[in-house]
Length: 390
Image (cartoon, rainbow, N blue to C red):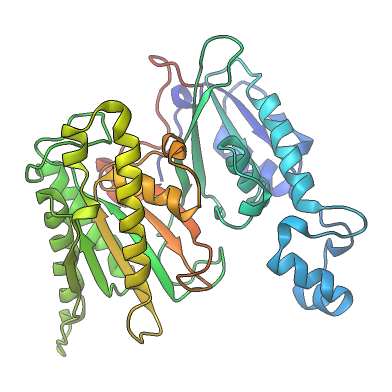
């Protein structure tokens, strides 16, 4: 995980009043002279009579209420309160205070539930998205705010969700429900024809040296899991990235004396390519065409996840970041206009879990995860001295 530099943090840190948040904030803030701001609304979710109970105690004492908390948290009611609705209201109130600061970068140190609410309310998602955008201990989520003319609301983009110090796909992760089904969206490595600084790559050249390194880093990260299927677009960079993943997966079990190669099914799908749309469509048609094509790609991935009798199924989709962004919108049942709310870098991965199977709600474990790229990644925090983000 990238370290925060003094220039990058640019002067303001807000934290929850709880001790664990206070200590985390002090470690991050170090010797900076500016005062850490304590914000009471950044405290963890209030559960009233549930507060302090173990799960088995809550289930035994409250029965139906506990059941509702598990399956319909957005409408969970206890002691005359709706905790998730109140949490969302607090998050909106926090944004009003956070964005009032003159500093260009603000670090917020809080807790799992309130951080979920902050991310969701920032990009316009309601209480039904509680437990859908996961937050891990020490996970970092980054939101970019681009100012608009005075009086207008800023444009908001979720640059990263849940960038964690350890692998987001390794066994033993404590955040979120257990699942046997998962889709990992891999943004292909940088190609020789990529335009620097753009996520809407329109070229179809082979990967350059950076792209080759990124593909290898992705393949090494995926050694933490057993990949069943790799589906790639037909562009050269997508195919090369997919092949790197397959080679490393199939060699994984041949490191000892008993070599039993791991079989990975490889497929290609043109719906993961958008180069033709980007090169030939009119600008005002691009979003619609990518959205429609990505919808077909997302359905294909869900169908692939549902194939066979495997008790565990992991599908990796390698393609253009633009189509992955749109598939994220389909996963969350948003509109095509939502695509401006997400960002992906080359070589990144985004992970969607399906604890209730392919027909259930996809749970987003991370978006635009790049820690595996090390020095070859774009830092999760960047100096804002030369741009307009705050």
